[in-house]
Amino acid sequence: MKTKIILTLLYAAFFIGCRSSKNVKLSKDATIHWFLSIEQTPCFGKCPIYLLSVNSLGISHFDGKRFVTPIGKYTSTISDTTYNDLKKLTSNVDWKEYDTEYISGYTDLPSTILRYSVHPLDTFTITFENNLAPKDLVHLASRLNEYRLSAEWKPKK
Image 1 (cartoon, rainbow, N blue to C red):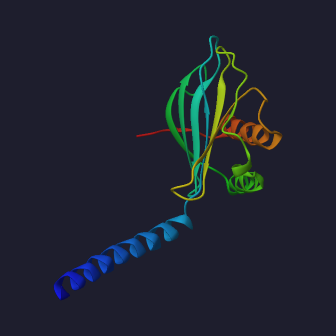
Image 2: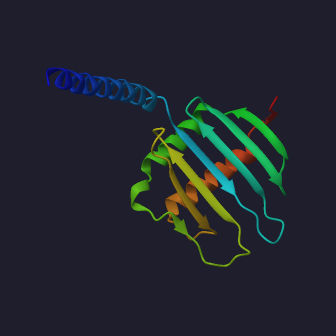
């Protein structure tokens, strides 16, 4: 009976110890994790198709697929001004209050997909067409598109 109690306590201590070390790692990562991306999906015409992401290190990645310049995978360093602007815009958005989709239902329209995360386990994904999303999301997408057009893209190696 004593052996059973000791084994139970050892198992409990093991799992509690593992859990607390995992939480320490997550909270440490949470202080450096910030991610924002925009993806443009295809339509039946010549809509730009691409994926652009920006991370907490100020590095942006671009994957141009069709009807966009440049085509292929590229990277760039975002300016402090643009990075701070994007961080401010994302912090002003109440991500939890929005629907995950603002879609008209027409299959030939391209969609914009915004993804945002400040912690590895809490990525928000919002998909919308045209300007159907709330204004602050449409503005954020517009700002990311402006950055895409002005960035100095270098081919990924």
